[in-house]
Image: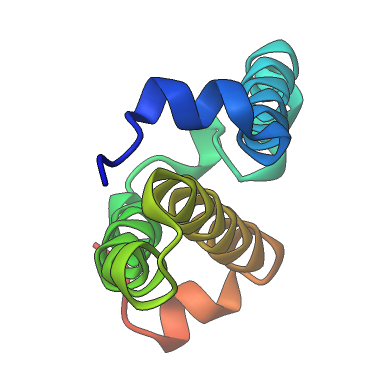
Length: 115
């Protein structure tokens, strides 16, 4: 029996279309509200020199994505939907980590992330 191509799966399955639509909506909203989001995350002239916390958030997202991808793709047999879900969850975790650091700047000093 021949496996269906990704294009055929995408056309047949409404879940894939929903994930694609939600991801596109998330990207569009992030772009449209870029200035308030950057301000919320602490991107201002007063916070220059704090690249380590931002790098830690980015690394958290990347490492989490590397761990979740095989789990969702192979472990749960979700194929490319699993990759999409893993990427979305990793981006959310990275974003929430950045918000937590911005909301509680004392963490930056406590965790030793200062320059």
